[in-house]
Length: 192
Length: 192
Image (cartoon, rainbow over all chains, first blue to last red; front, top):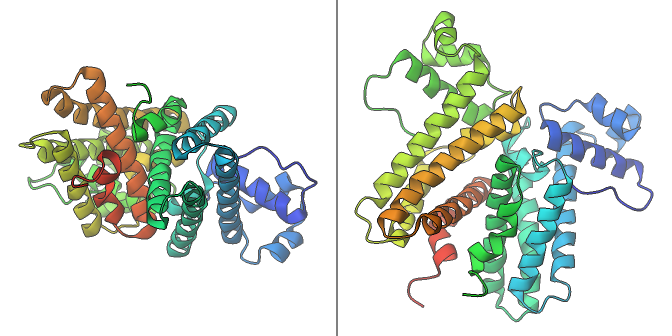
């Protein structure tokens, strides 16, 4: 989902990064372990050393990594923002820019887990945990703006629900406009 | 996605209905044509008579059928509603009830098309058309309440973006609470 890491990646990082890219483009069922190994430039033995359950473990790692990257974008967007609305707006614009850079037809490795995989309930629980972690990451900024714990959680969940729906619509339309207009949808136009 | 049709279904309907159920539960890649035929009780020749491209045609028909069913729920919800908010609230509650009745881990045949399938761009365009049809179906009710064409489209798109994000979160959590609370998220609590 995101540009390559800047530091020299470890073998484990390379596997996660290759798997994330392939799962996004081809889905879980459509991705073979041989392709992941080829793309990562890693021998098979290293894969099972880091990920004993192979592809299923890689899928969960891809979801976790994606969640961490989204939280990093959230933290960047809210750093220095004067209030929730400004932080949320910057977040939506950063993600819209990312959408424009990436192939907009690609799926999200977190939500992809909901649809596929050999052990649906384990995958569902893993996707839920990743999404809850993103909501908690955004809610921290609401609390920093003086919201109550409950209000910050509500604001963060509303933003992420709106974002998820907008991202899906943007993918359908191959157009990020709906991501950029999300703050106005959620909080109303500023000048009216 | 929905309970069985009340009238005696045609062969074509039976195929669409079986395919929709299986795509929802197992995804496009995970569903075999033999299973669709067995579940529908239809011989292979009839399948290719109605759907010359086989599984790909069935997937598009499943998305179209799902969109039509959602528009039916929208029309039911807004019939007799005094304003947009009441209609939207009834829609969310009807869909939450449906979520509780169905296996909540199942996918939506429309969004499933985004992730899988042999011809991603054709599928994406088909999913987009189905989603746009749902938005237009909701927008008609906004216009009936006196909204401008643009305002009704915006209101309908916001509702469907929120609904799509909430449905995904509900699936992750196996809990429809987030569908029932969507109107308060979008329009604010009534009594505050």
